Image 1: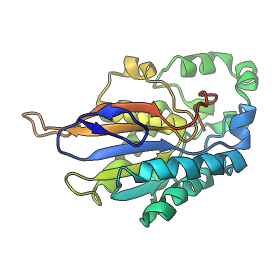
Image 2 (image 1 turned 45 degrees about the horizontal axis):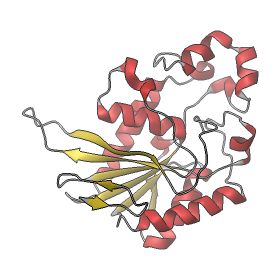
Image 3 (image 1 turned 90 degrees about the vertical axis):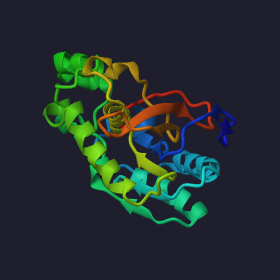
Length: 230
């Protein structure tokens, strides 16, 4: 049994570990706006969240850090980089959902603009294009590919920290875990600067890589999930 810095116990077989870490809070998170790929920076609260969470995540002894190229994720990743001395590599595949004409609007406004599509989206439908742009399947595929690229820098028993966004992380987790599409909605979103951990499982007979969920939406601050797609 191993205990992480937040005090939660977990056990895992020898293998790699992926820590998916959501960026800190922004003014648009606070206002309930769908940020998508609009490059909104962290606010002061978000920078403080990142600094505090970085101290705890550093105790997991990460071997590599990769982040979305959007400023809110890069600034969050830089907080961990400054503590660990590791470079934070950037991969645009970890961006949040491109939500087309929904971006910048509150969910109440989107519900007026596009009620049927938003209902399907919020119900977890993987084929609905957010704002006419990306589907959850689109996002999950590119997040998975970005994670695969980054794992090349991680030793056999090492830890990769992936700094991304609420919606991108949720579908990336579902995709990596191999959940059926109709169960993707069973995973909750992450609070700002909280994280989830995937642990490598022993390969099955076909030799394919398997992951299991070791922790989900763990963190240091009692902040509720107010906006997933950010």
